[in-house]
Amino acid sequence: MLEEFVARSELTGLELWTPDRVRAAVPHVVQRRLVGALFSPHEMNLDAPAAIAGLTRWLARQPRANVLPGTPAVAVDGRTVLCADGSRHAAGHVVICSGDEFRLLFPAAFAASDLVRCRLQMMSLGPQPASFRLGPVLAAGLTLLHYHAFRDCPTLPALRARLERTHGPLIAQGIHVLVSQGDDGRLVVGDSHAYGQEFAPWSEPTVDALILGELLRVLDPPNREVERRWTGCYAMRRSGEPIFRAEPQPGVEIVTGVGGSGMTRSMAIGEATITRRLAGSS
Ligand SMILES: Cc1cc2nc3c(=O)[nH]c(=O)nc-3n(C[C@H](O)[C@H](O)[C@H](O)COP(=O)(O)OP(=O)(O)OC[C@H]3O[C@@H](n4cnc5c(N)ncnc54)[C@H](O)[C@@H]3O)c2cc1C
Image 1 (tube, rainbow, N blue to C red):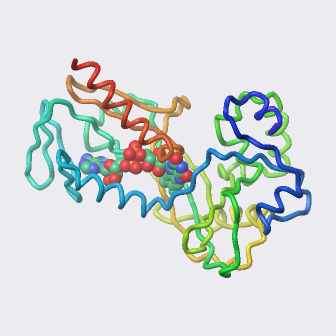
Image 2 (image 1 turned 90 degrees about the vertical axis):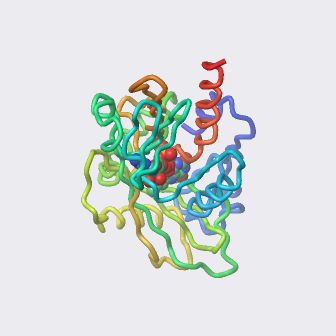
Image 3 (image 1 turned 135 degrees about the horizontal axis):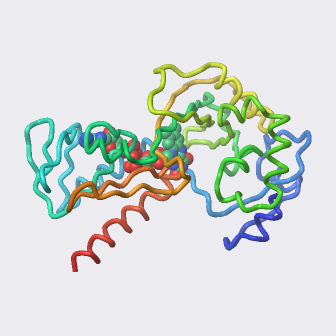
């Protein structure tokens, strides 16, 4: 299936790696049953909390931006946004990017949509020895079922049938295993996917155990101790469309539903949203 993907892809720089090449790049990869790997130079690994905080600081320094942290918008009256602290903000155009918060602003527009919340479980494994290097971000085989990029590969149905036999409990929890190494040496490991509108506040230990078990089938990290566990939610469309846009009233636009690749695509979505707006107003 990886060969099919490379043959069909328009991306440059993709490489099919032999087991020896994988071992050279990922010294702690589990070698048993290792057949090969696809290397993509296009993937990037960011520390999300640091990146989000950095972007907010950058935005706050821009002369025409007014960043109001901790200030929920509670209503939109025409093109004026009303905030919980009583402040009002008039705008030529209002863009609502409330993520998976569907209830506060324009709940009817959200109720009429095919948006759903997706909840993920993730974890980090404690500090690794200073000499440990993961190498590139690693994804195991279940990832091939998860991302739309692979959906046109002819072998996908056969692979899915096989993995449903061998990995049924993981697939039932929407698990595919990704692991990256942070600047502090820790390993960030994900993730499971559950779909709905409301979720229990706790994470499921059985789901974490499945993620960890699958990780250890492909990677042998020196420190296997789970240091942190967390959950997170994003909004996505049941149809699989990559974004949700709606105009509940003139001059007000909702942009959300970007799913599991929202961090990757956010800059382009922001640029496209503003460019469309400027083109429309010229
Ligand atoms: C655990 C996890 C791992 C992920 N990993 C990846 C990954 O590896 N790569 C990737 O590309 N994507 C990843 N994603 C997906 C990505 O995080 C989302 O697609 C993206 O954050 C969605 O961006 P957004 O701006 O639409 O919504 P959000 O990031 O949810 O931002 C919405 C913001 O609006 C605020 N808000 C809501 N309502 C109001 C209101 N009324 N007034 C004021 N503020 C309001 C919220 O507090 C929130 O800060 C991951 C998501 C999760 C949960």
